[in-house]
Length: 426
Ligand code: BJ8
Image (cartoon, rainbow, N blue to C red; front, side, top):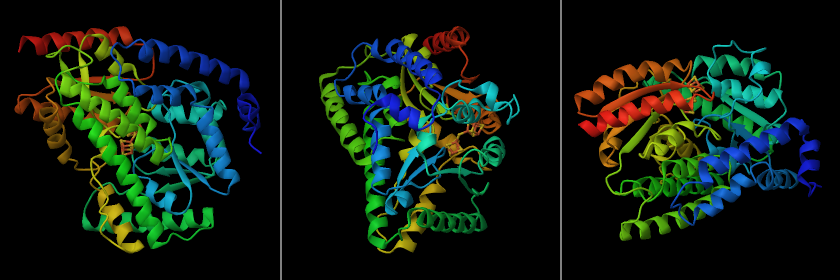
């Protein structure tokens, strides 16, 4: 029986209760300062506020109840791990966070100090016993994307059951064959874990559920092209962050409710800033919950973030899986094909990404691009240099920002203000 009391539930999951209390109180205060003080928020954000207020409560309880009913919980850190497959086998996929500076001292016993904070964070959450999701997961799925993650999963094996998918580094025909085989290996692992064979019907239904979630997120993204923007970048980011761990069907319905309200706002010309406020597209490394620093700084400088070219953003929802195929093998082909359209900087070359960023900037009416990369994330840092030149060639200004999870808001603010001033002069 799942305990009805949160503290008892956390204790049974093996969390460090004292440290966990501290984390929740810091998170609660940060949420109040960053989110609840924003002016002009859409009413429908109440649902997402509620989800955050229950981040380690209700959703954890729901997952434990699902486990009691025999469902398996699979945890992942990358959009290449296919939710469709897990759902079709009767499981639940949750994206783990890794957006806070937690347990870094412990993580550095396994990882070099000069490691991306996202990676250190997921290790830190586990080692400091602060994440109920990692504790309740039946399997953690990693991928061979960047070197940091690749090497990190080697050690993570000793802490939790891990399955690593080999993601190719290129998108040539041979790489596609490799990735399709990896998908088949993943299907085998998930079927063995859940004890359920993935049928044609179950996979078709799961593709529909995940595509519906992507369509809802795409609808939200498109509404942000209005001037004034009907929703802040912070709120839109939060919705994208929650997309990784909420129940997919409930989440989709709530995003559509939000979009209905935003459509009314757009029709009335109502926004979160005055018309003509500086508009910024953020591009680069993912921002896992509770990493809100960059949009918070940008928006507290009077600008509005109108899009995220990121895996916690457009890369997660832009393309759909073809729903046409009837049988499971053809559906898996379609899943693999969609995944290999994701423009992650771990691929070489990854030339399409520059076109995507330029197109998004134009479609969303962005005045400039802030390229965000986490410290020690070489793939995105390397692409930023070329992207800057390519965007400049098309008359789009870009600012390169490299930061971690430290409290360096003052420095970030100085740079963002200078960038906004430069944009205003053009
Ligand atoms: S598909 S972006 S979610 S790998 S920020 S850990 S790349 S050093 S997260 Fe990613 Fe999948 Fe690619 Fe998307 Fe490494 Fe960079 Fe850290 Fe990163």
